[in-house]
Length: 89
Image (cartoon, rainbow, N blue to C red):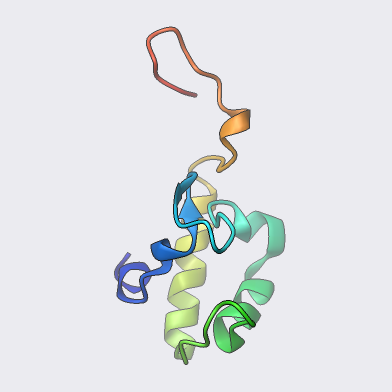
């Protein structure tokens, strides 16, 4: 996603356990927290996460990205089944 890269979100956040360690893994944030919670953080930032002054359209786009990503799998590698051939489920 262009916005994810534009704001270098992966420097602090992970998806599927890959990325930075300052912020939480966001793979399943949509189902865990919901779009309103996500929007509040994206609009205001926190003491650690800067306020990027995102537009309403950017917040909407990032929420859509999180919704789609949430449906594709789980972020916690402890829940993965490792197959004998090295692949995971």
